[in-house]
Length: 377
Image (tube, rainbow, N blue to C red):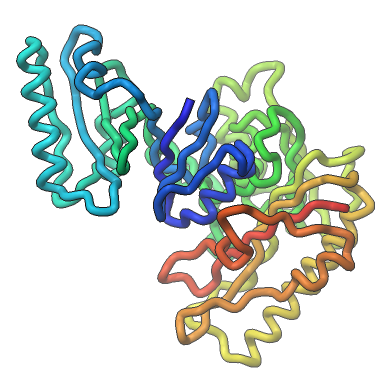
C-alpha cells in the first residue's frame, strides 16, 4: 500500500524520521512538505514529525464515495498540489456533496477557509479519517488519497502542559521532538530499552514508554530525577496500558553522563537532549558564543567517550545538541562532526536531509536544537 504523508513544520527532520522507520528505499519526497511511503501499516500516533496520513486509492473517487456505509457523512478536501486553488477545491467539495445527495446521503462539508487545505486542527476536531464516514480527500497532483487520521494535537498538548513537574530554566523538550529522537534511535524496532543520560524532566522517557519501550533515565541533578519520577508516575496513572504487568519497565537514578556506569548490560538505544545551557534573551556576543560552544563540546565528547565502552557496536544514538542564533538569523552550533570518527562513531546520513537540515527551532528562540544521529563503529 502507498500512503501520502503531510509533514510537519520541519519537513527535513520529518523525512529523516520516516527514513529511519520505513527505510529510505520506501520513502519518496514528492513536495516540499509531502512524502509517499510504501508500507503495510502506519503508526501515526508515534510519528512526531507527521501531521496527516492518507492512503492512496486507485479507484475513481466517485466510486469510493458511493460505496461508503449508511449514515451521515462528514466530508472535507485538502489539495496540496503546487497550484491548488481554494475556490476550486471548495467547488470540488460541493460537487462531491451533490453527488452523494443524489444517492440520498446526508452530507456536512468541512470548510477550507482561505486555503486549499484543511488545517490539522480542523481535521483533528472533525475526526476526519478517524471515525466511520468522516472523510478527508487528500490530493496532490495525480494522487488521490483518503485520510486515515491526523496528529492528535490535543494529546500532545496535554502531555506537554499538564505534567506536574516542569522547568523552563532547563528547557522544555516538545513531546513531538522527543518522539522523533526516539524513532531516529530505534529505527522502528518493536522492543528494547531507551536510555536517556540527560533525562531532565523525563519527556523522552515518557514518550518512550508510551511507544512501548522500556526507559532508563539518568541526570546529574537529583531535582531532575525527582521531576522525572513525578511526571512518569503521572503518565502511568493516566495510561491503562502502562499499569499492566507486562508494561514497559522504568528506571531512574542520578548520574553524571560523563563518568556514570549505567546498570544495564548494554542499552539498546540512546535518545537524549544534552544540556542546552542557560536561557538567553538575545544572540550571544562572539566571545560568549565561543565559550558556550566549547563548554557544550567538552560535555558532548566526554559523554561519548564514557558511553563508548558501555554500548555494543552498531548501537545508535540520537542526540539534540545546542545551536545558537546569530544576529543575522543564522545558527552556529557545536563543531563535532570532525571529532566523531576519532571517537569511534559514524554519523548516519539520510537521503533527503543533510546534517544542516536537522535543525529544530522556533523563530523566537535563541537556542535551537541540532539533531545528530550516530552509530558506534
